Length: 453
Length: 99
Image (cartoon, rainbow over all chains, first blue to last red; front, side, top):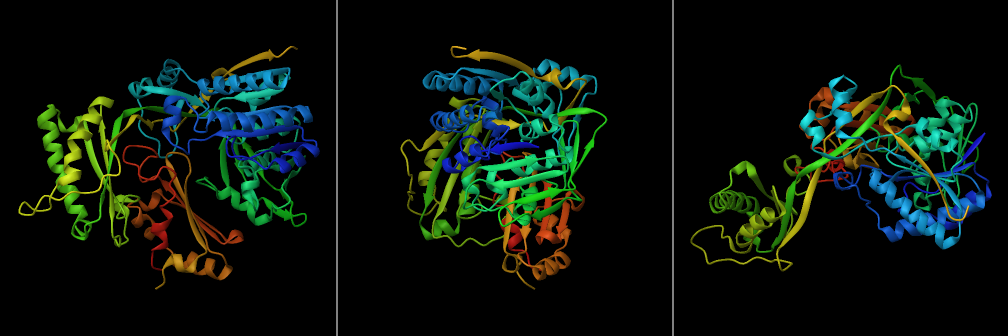
């Protein structure tokens, strides 16, 4: 049997300290936590930075490093620093060294890096080793070269190689959410379907149970299945909460693709062992003929400045869409003229908060607001240009009249200056898989000893 | 005719990666599941999102009283056109469907 302790769905989200202590008392074989996701958008992969604060990350990581020292088992994090680039692996490694020095720990640390060079990826594209996943955008050599970061998602094999070094702590770049949990059970001969299925159920911590904020869960893997036990006394796993987690952020609740194959849970059975624990059997792992890893890439998509204005006058609230369309038309013409720009070199968009800012043209609900927020978004090829165009937009949002004949109106601006630079913006541009001859070929593993050891 | 949001317990939408959107309709009871499973047509869901009918994956899961739809995201997550980074609000459109 392999016992995996999962402190929470992501480092930075917090965990219940008592529940973590209970998990350590249960003598796990490994502690595994996810460090990221694409869910917060392309900025993090584009810039190679973390979404969570350094202070919060260090506080929680220190708690896990202290727990690891008590348990004397490996601690592994996947997708370190939100995006799992080489830069965020280095960022967490630096934090780890600080904590080790502050707490007097001697440690062997393995770093697994997932960044891919554009040259290797364009070569792979040329020889047909890259395949598009459903709904992938079109790619070519130029798009690949324009990426600021490309990462490959490591699977269980790369984590197993890192574990085999005898490292106390493994800081992995981009991995699948499940790989860090499935790796040890698979290496120790547990049921492969159960290893991947239990990893998927456990990857968000206690989200597969009641009181998900408590975070900490324990997953026991064996030859036939797996058992989920929440570590907080207030948290209960039921067959429903466990099965329902297969819905979460999955386009298919029964099939999950991983490097080297896929998980099929169509025939899985979920059994309540008591009112808090669930046993799952019948999950199936289907190996694939080719070993592929998913790629993620982000690239610069321009620079933005935003302006916020507020309409409270009932006549302007009632006619906000007409008013905005007129401003976009006039301001676009003035921008082209004053800055000598072609219309495709910039974009001015006004979103109506309180009308359809969330869903845009898909919105069906009637507007009932007594006020409308105008979110003006300017996109251009440089930060300075985006700000300049936002300054051209400013007087329209402050004074533009619905009709020529009326007295000049004035609207509410919450800030001075009205324009706010968002700097560089990024976009996701890869949804593809890369075929590998050897699972390690796209990843770099480094081992170092820190402290006085 | 009934408003879908008035029959079911909860409708949740989320990203399933940057390029896919997934919507889970938690019916809350066997009776509601039976009703919605029969009455809600995949074509209606496609129309709400201006999507192609055959681009939508549908899963009717009686054990959970859940009906799940997945489709290519109406705009790629975080692209300049995107308005909802986490795909959190698309479920509201289904709640307003009449069945």
